[in-house]
Length: 106
Image (tube, rainbow, N blue to C red; front, side):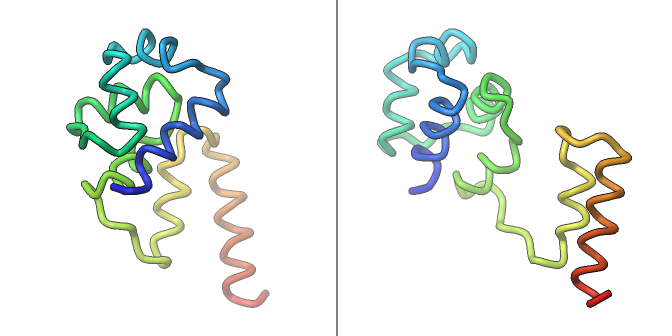
């Protein structure tokens, strides 16, 4: 939970969004977003989903930082690559091949 607010703030700043703009894009009130960023409120899964959508961030990252999901084991990296929406299927496969080559020492 301690990582959630700074993660959202960093994502908002990376997108060059003010708190007000993120509020408008997510449909969540400006004061409530501010409280989330400062760690004063624990948002629901639905609120996190709205924030993730507005930031274009992977919802899984927000869920992990909020304590809703457990951090996956290292061996689950291939599954994470396959779920990454920013990568095309060809990019996912290329990245998986590269990862397996490094992992297997080849």
